[in-house]
Amino acid sequence: MKVLICHIAVVVLMAIFVGTAVLGADSGQVAATVTASVIAVTVSDGGVAYGTVATSEDTTSSGVNDTQTITNTGTVNEDFEIKGVDTTHWTLAGAAGDATYAHKTCIADCDTTPSWTAMTTSYTDLDTGKTPSATTALDLQITVPTANAGTAQETANVDILATAS
Image (cartoon, rainbow, N blue to C red; front, side, top):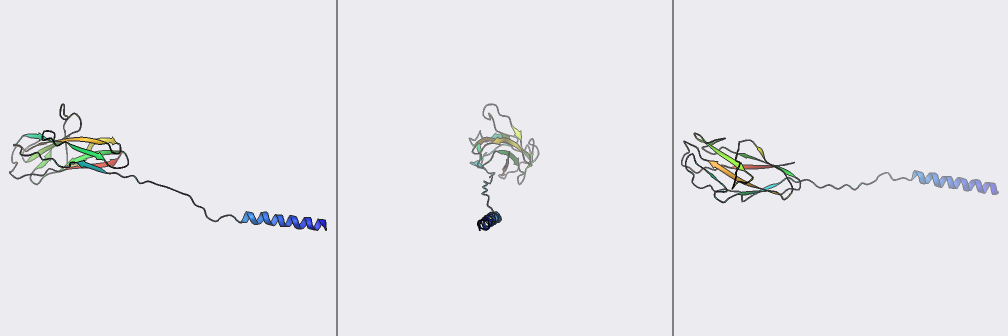
């Protein structure tokens, strides 16, 4: 009888162990978190009033006390690019000419030793590796056409593009 009880006990224990091994979960969960990167830029104050400029003459945004501030308002490092546009009556060029105007940028020492870079109608590099909340001071210089400037007020827009660096 003792042998029978031992055999029954062994069978019961084996059933418990085998049954437990079969009772595994059929699904699990992984906690995954993510933060989306945001690429954003603001330009303050966003407008330059050059005033009246004579044919073939130039003026600057710093000369009219209107330096612009570009701010990385995103969450990642950014590169800034810039481009100009043709106006209603003028074509953007590297230098002023007959019905063409020049629009240039400066981002360092613009009041003392400016280094002006001509804009084109395609995006070109302006400043790189700007951390979130970092700023770039931007001065602009416009040169009115040498001839055929017309008499109407022109709007020479400038576009700033931010990309992840």
